[in-house]
Length: 96
Image (cartoon, rainbow, N blue to C red; front, side):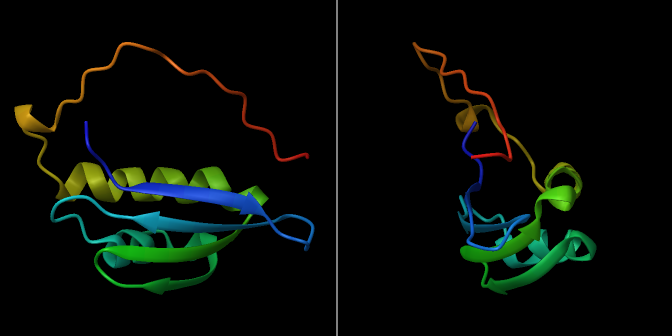
């Protein structure tokens, strides 16, 4: 499935992540980030791209709020399915 994507990185400030996102299709990232605003420290952007600063303690709550926005506002169609040959696995940790 083709979906908006965010990439987050640690900052020099302990417990803070900064991320940058790009949208796909007609998914409005500004509205998606606004839907998670109670978990976000700072944000900016427009329909197609957004930047977010979030505390590590609020990261997964923010993700869930964005996923809920997408589930409520985005229609998935068969052409959005992406097939792949390899599976990449990773472990998410907030400690460098």
